[in-house]
Image 1 (cartoon, one colour):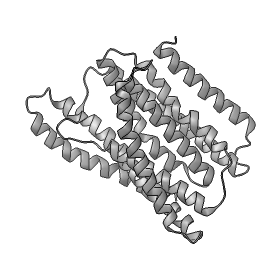
Image 2 (cartoon, one colour; image 1 turned 90 degrees about the vertical axis):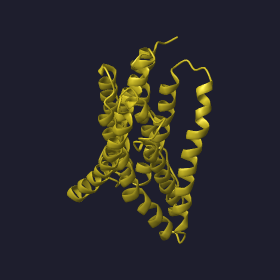
Image 3 (cartoon, helix red, strand yellow; image 1 turned 60 degrees about the vertical axis):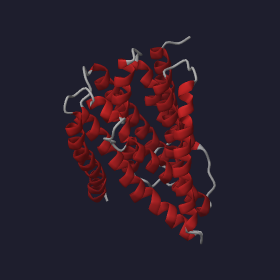
Image 4 (tube, rainbow, N blue to C red; image 1 turned 180 degrees about the vertical axis):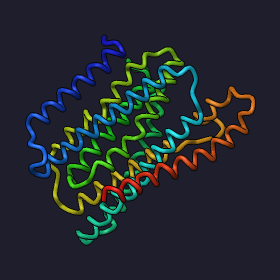
Length: 288
């Protein structure tokens, strides 16, 4: 049976091989499919690098910095919310309107939120099942694989989308890797297993970007709406929660003035989320 490091290494090698195969067979920049796949490959490796960097930092930290954790989650979730609202929701509604059914995008959006919530809620039952890998790594891996598949489909449907959307969507991989590494280290597990979810985005994003999809606007409207709903749910889930029993509360509970510290962190949570969202707007204005 492979060790944690072995599983992560295999996933990394598979992603590298997949990327090399795509680079060698697709003429990037010539045709929409080539452009879409090229962007997806880049986004996949950015996601990989972000989670590896977060894991490295989390695995070497002697203690978790609550302010750093709040700002990491806040910046990432704010960027994801703004990106979904700016790039996916308008596309969904616009495609639906072009097909004479503007509500199709709204249906996809609602389905995405509900499916994301349902998967997260029902997925909690997995914590009661024995897995060959730590449950934290398993949950993050499933999330990464699902997110990657959706990213691939979105860029396949609309190759003209820029890198900003994808990069904002995977921005949470850094703080997620940091937090997961801290939990794994605290529980005595090998953080190398996080190479698996780090590679997970690309393992599904690249193949899904190559799958032919229907060209009907109404179908694409539902796809874009669904993607927006999923990413909005993920972003809301990553919003830094400074309430009793939250991950942030567990970090600061060792402090004598934990209640006062939580009050300070609430302000930082709001500020970091706003900064994350406004950063996407500023980047869009610059590159537009």
